[in-house]
Image (tube, rainbow, N blue to C red):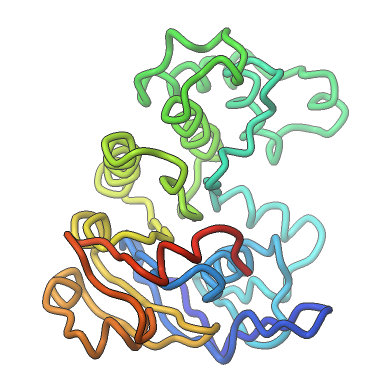
Length: 268
């Protein structure tokens, strides 16, 4: 179980990205985080795996406070948490399989990783991950030669190489068209259901939330303002909706228009 307790993050410039956020995530859940750009979704995910250090609060995972880990203990914890990014974060001039193998860096001595000296077992594992994501035939192409959807599948395969127990996906489909978005979400759902991985995923569009989430939390200006199930999202009232997205937002075809779409972009 993951327990986030009274989490607050204040950046050096005084920006308050998270304010006293508390919630729990059961093992094997598919939790979706919703909210406007700037609501704190990305900051929350990055605090969970300590890419960002929280200002206050605790993040307890299976009885261990992640916020207190340092050095080798932190490195071992990060092995268990895969991260998938909105803009893929691939080395575009490197091959697909090299990008996937980078997911093993937490298990590889630094001097070996610098020279790309991965074991035969790791290379076989990388091919298996690519096969599972349906892009084994792209293994030796440069990452920049792939389509956006294929690049994100490489990102998923890289996370899988960590043998994670949890996957954090930060707006993983925001750069993709609706058909490709569902394709990537289906792969995350597969890992959640077949491997029992806990998935925490931030999303903008309610149709995707309704389809894939088992539970939902909503952030607004860094505060937790909503918690509910997939069924609760489907029955969301206009009052609840506007409490998350603001008075100017409107629901259309399961998605959003107005202020939400006009503010998409960078996020605290």
